[in-house]
Image 1 (cartoon, rainbow, N blue to C red):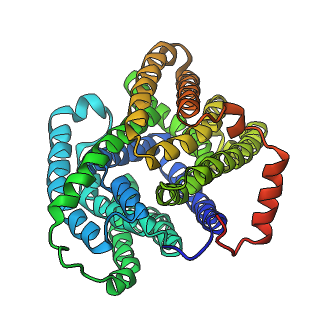
Image 2: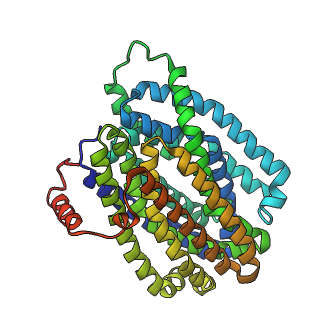
Image 3: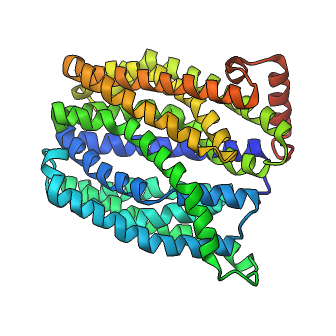
Length: 444
């Protein structure tokens, strides 16, 4: 397991995500300024296809690896062998699904996007799928040093290669998409490099070859986590697809810009979630510590996210116009409408991780179904009338609903009330000060 303390791991992960944010915003700005709203919309929609396929076909293997390795229920060797076996089968299925979508539904689901761009991103599906499997092993081992290096390399490579393709080779949107695929390929190489020391140190147990047993447990836990994650992802992106359906790729590009900025508020909640899942899984025999840890981490995430949202609300105009030019001025209103929902969902994410660490991914699944249904209905009602602002309104309403349901479920399971996850107490301040003073101690 990782040698650093929980607070240190969260801080390092958050720092990596913060640096990744700078790089990602640089990439978004580069594409927006060079390709314009139309080119950016086509780029985003093409990448959306490959991302959807990876999420649909991963069968929850990454989540299961983190859960079972964190609990100490499976060795690294067995988890790796099982992951590779499943990756081969799932890659074939995923590419097949993607090919079918492009062949039969591209005109209806991705209007205005040339088919060859969709084929380019489909080539990256097996690469990014295996990358996700390998990274999950590092996360389960709580090796957040190498984990963060691997995840930071990908956006850096994407930025550099995209800049070369667009500015150097003048290859436009198509070149940017090839750069996206190549960045994943090089990142996969780094993932193997990061995992190598653990594989060399791991011992092979007598029954290590019996991977079918873990594969069954992995899929049994993973498919529920996968469906919940899939539905959550569709909830996040359904408004994007509906905007493109009702309007155009150019309008989609405006909304994607607002979403890209708003969702960066989740950097801290994502960092906390990535560190907390293996740790909370590890604490499955210590309920008292788990009930202290989740509210404290969730509370801190909520307060910081709220502060960032207030700053973004006030400076939304100068930020968007200054970075993306005045062509993106319509994105300002959408960004402001997205902020309340994004902050609320940062709380729901903390609860979701606690439920997953308890093996209750089924509850996350049920909530995801309700969330997706609500955002689709609200989007259909609001987008035709209010455009991208309507999409943002629909998104915020569904995120608020998700959060309320999660808070109720968490209370029924743990007895912890909603305000204990959001309102700080003096004891919390004392704990945080202690953690800052002893940031290098693993005392959680």
